[in-house]
Amino acid sequence: MITLDDCRGLCDADPALVARVAREEALPEVLALARAQQLCHVANQEFPAGDRNRYATGAFQRLAA
Image (cartoon, rainbow, N blue to C red; front, side, top):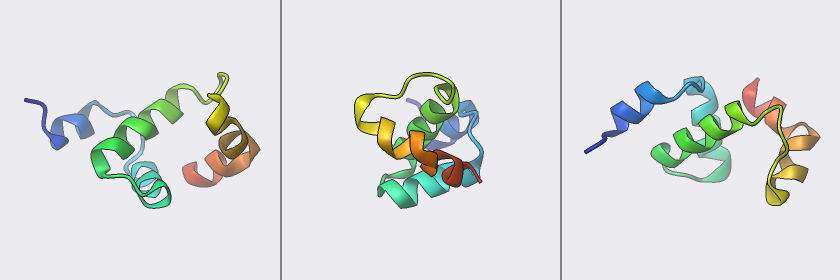
């Protein structure tokens, strides 16, 4: 079974970004890890329709700061 510590080790995202995603999107840490990982890897690609407005307008830059 994969543990939370395993997920932390596999995630490229900065722990501060994970914490901010968890807080701002009200997600458990394991889901915030996955979301932060996705944000890190799709930052230069097209966003899904639901995220386009939120992250394309600078909210992602504020999360990453």
